[in-house]
Image (cartoon, rainbow, N blue to C red; front, side):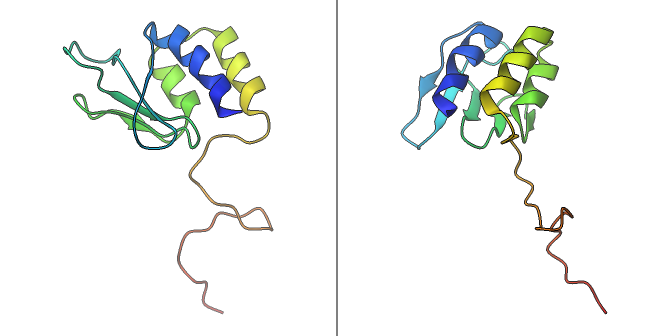
Length: 106
């Protein structure tokens, strides 16, 4: 499923992504800076992204689309691609609460 994200990112970022050696990692020309090398790194599986020059980044691709001013159709297309598996690094408990890493005192 994550390979379907690549053409969308190519269109939104107006450049062609280049696969890195690391699994699911790609580089694009950053829309945030002018640089002679691609500096926007995106993990297409987790949705995490980072510009190595401007230090901008986020934990899901919806944030990236918002930052670059993508149109509504791009957001809709991304939503259709990821479906209910929303890109997020946040882990959920079975009860729906967030896992914070702290144990609750009783």
